[in-house]
Image (cartoon, rainbow, N blue to C red; front, side):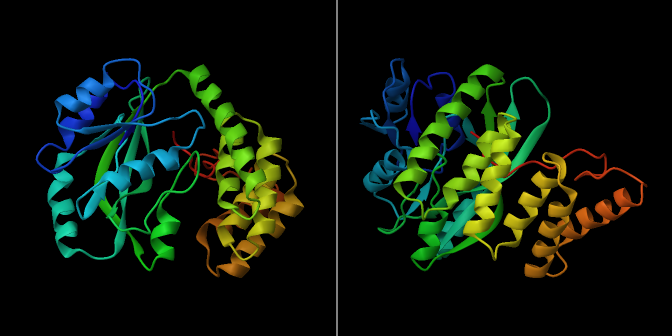
Length: 295
């Protein structure tokens, strides 16, 4: 884990892995509350980490480097493991395959009973080449695959509880945008950073900027059907430019024949041109979510 000022949520997180993890490694990036004491009380090795330069991947990799056991489960302090999932984790670890496992993450806002779901790789073998990349929105997926491993989706579940403070989240969005821009300037070849930048702009409702980034993603990954689908969504719903949207969805279909989402948007475009209805991504006409960037 990496933590900072998590005294309120950390006990729930560590309680959720009691009896599963024989070793707890907690990297602290500058807490001023009781977080390090709480972690130590649970028997964790607590490692102070200089976070003057924001780099979440470096902090996670420091934790991995200190881990002694063969498998790693990575959690955040505002997440809890569904204990029903423990037997599945134990079974996968016993298989000892060279795989990174996607966990189902349910994202709960403090002001809503509803939740959104995404999938994140959090269970993986402790191997020298498996390291996180990205100063923010850090991921380990590419590292696992490039070192010969594979990625497998599971029904292991974690619950993520985040603050509903809209202004605080918008400040974080803006902070992340600046860091992502720095990363892109430092390594223009890493187009994965563009996905997260588009999502941050979308969350701020800066749709012109999000559309521009979606267009850059297509330029960087012209053979990626999902990239064409997403830029089509922006051209359809936020520009709007129906001609370009149609071309985008056709390109997505060309690269993935039978792509159901692209076919659905094209049908809606046909209906709109016939004056029958207005297109939307969902049955209720609401737009689809952008590329996920839950924080």
